[in-house]
Image 1 (cartoon, rainbow, N blue to C red):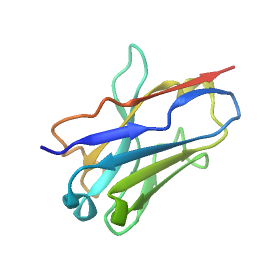
Image 2: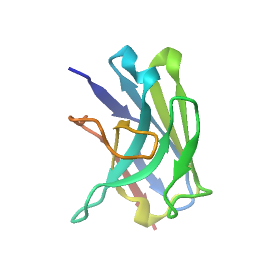
Image 3: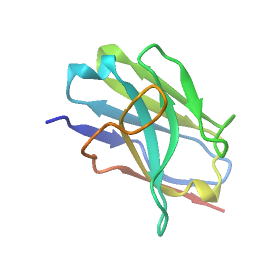
Length: 119
């Protein structure tokens, strides 16, 4: 069973930065695209950014220019650098496997990491 462990969340003021990490337990990590998703209270989970196995990236319009996704295949880890945070970025953030177009292919979720941005 693939395990995904997210970390790095916290409480930050608007305009601040956080760096999230997601460690995957299996070596298939390097063969797959990975996505960062978030779910705010009362809202559906949404894709924030994804990165292909070759390193191509794509972002939701709401985070473009503020967030940067990257990966370290040697560590089976994907990162999300979040700058210029806004209160509307408050959510639980998750990572998971996706295809190159950003469609979810993972079948289980980690515990996520809470990001809270105060105004």
